Image (cartoon, helix red, strand yellow):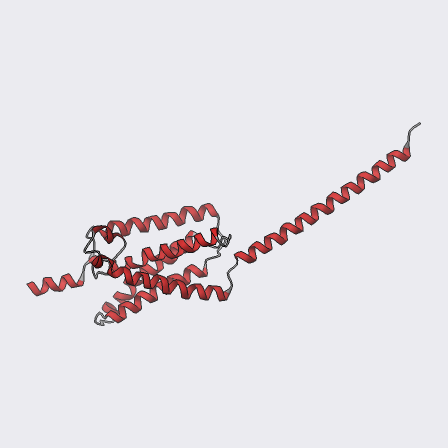
Length: 226
């Protein structure tokens, strides 16, 4: 005889097992979602933190860049120092003062995020974009007030322009610090922009180019001699 009672009991046990597995899967999914939310919360940058980051980054980068203005002179004219410090008073050399302090600050902060705080909140594109904005604003603002408004070059105005340019670049970086972007595209495009900037600054640190690289102090000496 066929034991139909045993078959029914087996089917009930199988159904119960399926229900238990489904509940376990749901709990695991909810746990994964909660964990993801917790990770996102840790990675998220609050408005207060962003403001503090803008202030800190601007001060550190601008002060390091200001000190880099004197490193070449302090080194006794060491050619190697020309790579990351200003060697004269040209507009280009002042643009270069942003480069290395910028890379140092954001590179150090990214390492701290990864190794200490175990979070990822940076992308290369915003780092490269902020750097290019800061670098480009220096000659734009300088020539705007000296050539556009015919105002005589002033040291105080130059310092203000340098700090303002750094501030604008930092604001861009912090504004897009959590921008969602494909990691491969970010790595390729960000690396290309940063490496291209490094190559340009390195090459033009040791060669003569357009008027932007001319030292106004040296021009004055040449005029005086004639």
